[in-house]
Image (cartoon, rainbow, N blue to C red; front, side, top):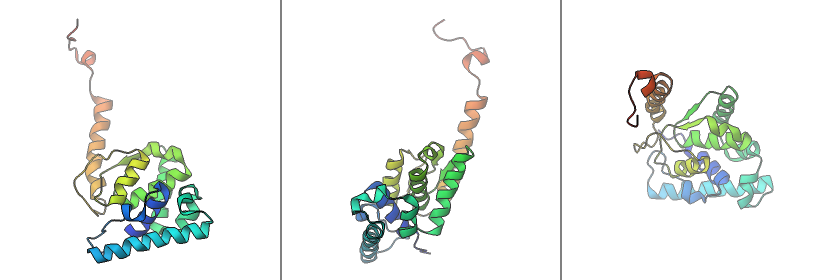
Length: 186
């Protein structure tokens, strides 16, 4: 379909991780080389425009006010995701991230509220290069790595049963002592 949200996501990821535009810009819905070159150039120009507007040097974007940075190069969907991440942390509810756009929102959120990072779960690793940069910056290991690109939530949906199973194991599984199993050392 190609709705263009991986472009502002790449710009935010580049700005907040300090990575070059070409390193974090992916092919989105599978664009050809010439279109990818254009997309990477657009992300680079967005970073330059934001630096000018925010009065920072290109390398200073990561220290910029995340809300101003979001206003300069983000999108409303990324702002909504950032708000959801902060709200999840405030309510002490984990947030499952799915793909590069949600990771951009998580970077904005954790720039605003660093403690929100403790409530994030990476559902999967997107093939978009910005996803790996964002995951590394956030210190997250994805639960799944299935080569998904733009799954509209499928990676997150696939990760939820794993999280439920882990929760049940932690809360319901008997220990050897509870189950009356003798230990090997005595």
